[in-house]
Image 1 (cartoon, protein in one colour):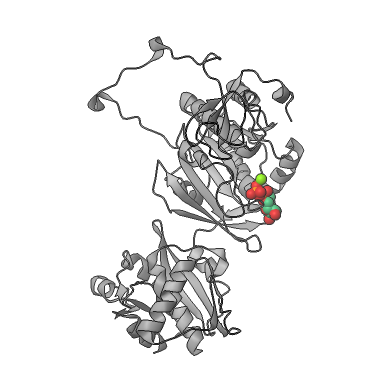
Image 2 (cartoon, rainbow, N blue to C red):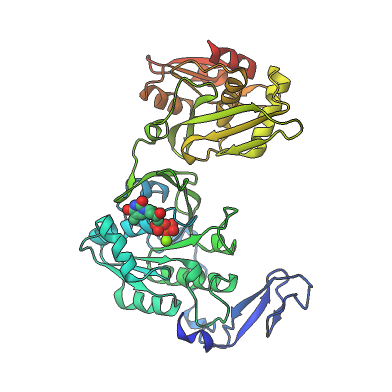
Length: 458
Ligand code: TYD
Ligand code: MG
């Protein structure tokens, strides 16, 4: 812990997060609006040197007169990672990388640090979580080598900023934002006040120096970024690192990006020598599939700009009366309930009283509506105990009336399926009419869930 913690540099104030009232000391309950647990510490900016300086202020400028800056993006060294970032690292941007402990955030950033350092100059890796020796130990497995990566085992924000000043790195990595503390605040590391202060000051430094910054953020068990939602508003880009700890597949996904499309995916595999990019993820996600079991369907999904074939697995089994369970992993739980209701009402397939488990293989999460038909196909297959014809892939949105709706980007989905050797795609009728499939892959357009289930059993 840095020494200055006990000796604050400036007086601080506590501000109510809900009504904005200020108080000289912390209250469990806001003295003004009465809300509980909302007081957040804030440095008193008027007491420090951060006064408004009219001489330094810029007047408003006419849009047409503002020169567009040619932002030369920095490559992270991984094409998979660059795509998620919207085509590389934007100078002056702050990127938050969130993910559960142990998923591989530090590993990915240390690898990227080495690649950026080798190509673009020194990288400062500030870690409040591990010592320089621990990081070095990991780096040896990752082949960091002699690239100019500077390690700083430090939690104090001001010290990190001093080192930025001294080294003028091409990239700054802060691992993690929750362990970074500013001496101007008295609150504990990881508190909302501290996290917000650190993120804001780092953002300021990033913009001022055109320095790209990566922040590591921990997520809570519920899956959101620990502590403050404010963090997501402050930074330019929010990425999530996903995957199951017991699987080697890892997915980096953009959920907010001021410099690119969201929902882009980067796929990696965790190996003994760190993370390896996976340029052809469909092959990886289907690699362990046992084709001949009922309850398994192959879905041709699109995540961001990229098609991705994944296996949807369903298991319907008789549960004890009154305790029927519905478990969904990788798809939305409410969507599962809805699709079960549609199956019952529109296709006469009832799972009442049965336990239903649905899973996307490989720990992936699929959120697009086109996944519906894959889920329905897998459940129906398990319910009837009949497997889906070999070499068949599906996609399509399912409506409450049991209709199958167009999914969009059908051509991309069909091409990916054909490339991986699938010979038939069961797709929305609307998409089938508009799509020219490669000769080796037949299209079967369906208008309803009932029709789709009949087609799958052929
Ligand atoms: P880490 O990057 O420390 O995770 P985070 O920073 O998100 O908490 O990754 C830790 C896990 O990754 C750990 O369980 C070991 C594994 N790992 C490998 O499998 N291979 C490797 O080369 C490295 C460095 C880590
Ligand atoms: Mg870590």
